[in-house]
Length: 195
Image (cartoon, rainbow, N blue to C red; front, top):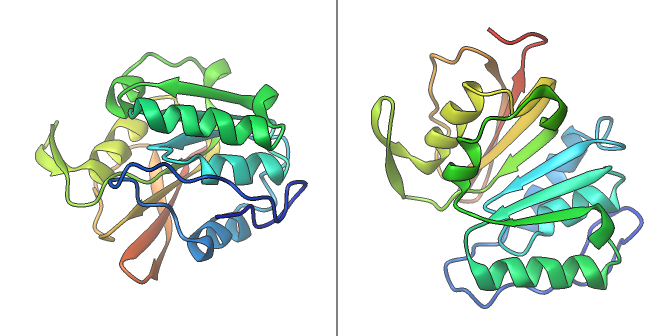
């Protein structure tokens, strides 16, 4: 794997040896940043289910102010830290070793919110949510919709194997859906004010 564009273009990054990690393809990474290229410079970026950290490192390479990586695998968090150090992006990186859902349930104030969030949850995994059993992707959408984690006007990108989502959202609006192979990329935007 390598960084696609920005100040670290062409630099290689290491993927975790964890077989459950499914790196986001270069094509899908390029799609995300083509969509948000006007907003990336100076943005506070959050990379959920970070794996190797490829998405967040790409964001930093393209001018994001900071990136918080949330990853539950201990070995994976070490790989993210090593990748950030190798790219000399560690000063702008904050690696959190935690369960993503525990992280999302924390109280977040407006000063700690993010401008751009990317989540690549494991496919075909379910958890109990407010509306019964639902996919990890749906749970992430629901938790972000009901929190102030995403700044007003900010974008949430979810990579999942389905384009179905919760239609009864309070603060998020589905902007677009793109499919690349097995993966579907959904883009949501938070309204300018919270309900």
